Amino acid sequence: MALRINQNISALNAQRNLATVDARLAISIERLSSGLRINSAADDPAGLIISEMLRAQASGLSVALSNAAKGTNMVKTAEGALGEVTSLLRQMRDLALDAASEGTNDDATRAALQAQVTSSIATIDQIASTTKYGSKNLLDGSAGTSATIIDSTNILTASAVTSTPQGYIDIDITTAATKAVVDTSHVYVAATDSVANDGTITINGVSVGSFTAAADTVQDVIDAIVATSAQTGVTAAWDVDHVELKQLSYGSDKGVTYVETADVLNSASTAVQWGVDSAATVTYGDATTEAFTAGNGLQLKGATSSMTIMLTEAGNDIAVDPQDGIYVTQGKMEFQVGNAVGEKVSVSVGAVSTSQLGTTGTVAAIDISTTAGADSAIAILDEAIEQVNTLRSNLGAFVNNQLQATVNSLTVARENLLASESAIRDTDFASQVVEFTRDQILVQAGTAMLAQANALPQNVLALLR
Image (spheres, rainbow, N blue to C red):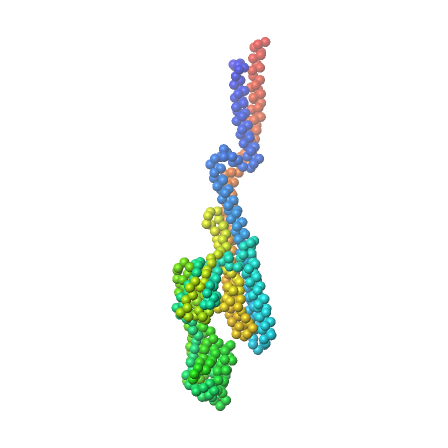
């Protein structure tokens, strides 16, 4: 055994091994105390890159899940308000049905019913303007496609759809709607003439009455037809030398079917005429055109889209072409529900103010103080209820098919990303404890051997005694 004191190789060797084991022990302590296998880039450079990417994706999916949850709550807020609008519209329809019963109502009763309708209209408008999620309006039209009427002289109402291009809309009337007219063929000198024969008259399936030459004049027949116009939809007037029968409404489904048992007004026992629907070519804001030929009466409706435009009687003229008559604004509620740019879903919520509800007329203009007004209100309210119910259905489908399905998918994706990130970055405690125990023992043994190695040079003193 060589005895040297200037260089204690054994001690240096023990010190080197002790330092190595001590460094490993420090790493084990760091991993066991942090729970992470990778605490710095030096631990696993490639693993750090992959795990950080997975961590960012998982974090992004957590935010997307939060966005979807908030979107669901937002849509449910809008749908809840729409439910109340539906309830108010249904109440208004009940009031209109009550007012339409002419035999049981007087002017005072109808005025009271109209007061309730006016109150409901104000409430619906308030709901439309004040329903918000945070500071965002939901039902005032800013969150959906809306149509603003510029030419109110010729256009009564307009309803845009999600696919309607933004911008001004031009309308070229190609067919004017007409009301069905029957010119009876029996010629009289004046309306005061007695009817030529005894007979009964039925119009549109409603009995107008029985008339006799001995007791009734042509004017009596006209008065009877006018008196039943609320049931038949047909009125009558003296026209030079005969009676003209005219449908009150425009359209191909509104006709005059006249039947009599004798030559009272018409030499033929039956006369039938039908009206004509309006049609137009519509130019959208992006310069595309569409034939509006699917409407009825004064209503223009797209042959391929579901946008509708209701003309006024002044606008029902092929010489009248409202240019820039409507302006369409595109709006929507958009939600980021993915990790990448563009991974969004959106839904449109149109305005539900009373000026926007109804197609043949607007809910805002409903007046049930007359029987005719009540009859018209029933039709308009049916249209409005259908509009609101369609919107509610669309919102429900959006929540189920877009948001909730996205939440389910993102939840699974985040779980798998976190599992992958954990496999790369987290500490395997079982194997790490084994390494820690081994290194701890080696540190203790190395410390003891270093002490022994440091004591070896003392043996030189035995040679010097």
